[in-house]
Length: 105
Image 1 (tube, one colour):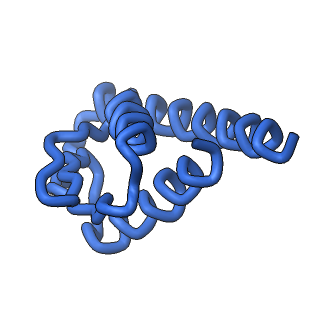
Image 2 (cartoon, one colour):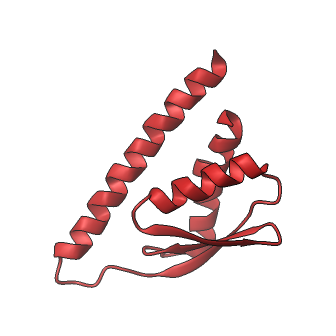
Image 3 (cartoon, one colour):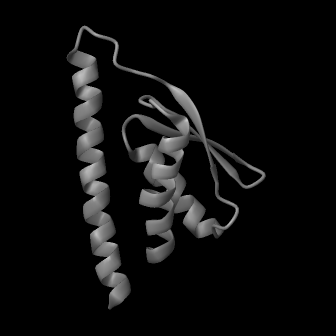
């Protein structure tokens, strides 16, 4: 029962992330200003099971503005269109995606 509640909470969180990301990309498309600050982020994913890694990489890729590039030696490489601080962005992804995926899957 607890996993079901966590899954529903994660679904709501992810839906919010997709909507916010879509709005951010749409604003950048219609805006004459160049708002993108692309960067490659690295995240340690050595503690994840193959199933958790699959879910994390797919969720990151399906979120507009981010793309999972590669997993090598326990490190996930992500391209982010909007990264002011790569270290803070990586920490945010660990807290908001990886930790929540580990709780659910």
